[in-house]
Length: 169
Image 1 (spheres, one colour):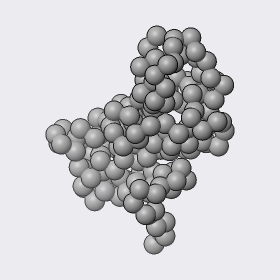
Image 2 (tube, rainbow, N blue to C red; image 1 turned 120 degrees about the vertical axis):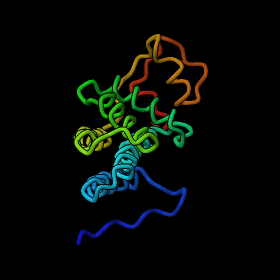
Image 3 (cartoon, rainbow, N blue to C red; image 1 turned 120 degrees about the horizontal axis):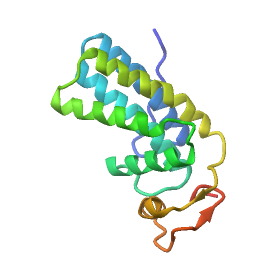
Image 4 (spheres, one colour; image 1 turned 90 degrees about the vertical axis):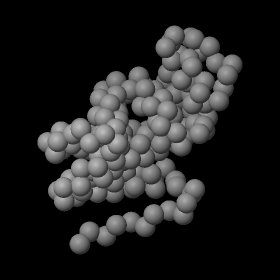
């Protein structure tokens, strides 16, 4: 039997805790699908990706990590900052799985595909946590998202940051 790390106290998750929770949840997604629990599998795969994205947001000191919308903003930002990591593809897959939790539209092979996509991206996102955020220049479509994530309403199109607009560097 695999030893599962203890969960952190409520409200006290560190970046590393979120990484561990993401790993735990992707395995639980596989286990749930194997048991035929399609709803739980799709919800756990969504949660696994959300935890990894929130780890990036937390590392950067970004605001209000609790909402679905913020997770979407983080995915969009990381997709732009790390073009070699298919963040948006994983986000769309996981979000489709999240909807399946409510709508029961996906077959086990479709769910397996979602788990495979997300499980493939998690290690890349985890690896990216070990390096400082990359330089980023705000383009037209980025402004509202970057302002929302950082809480810095004074930012403008064309502003650059050597640390991806992290609030912690």
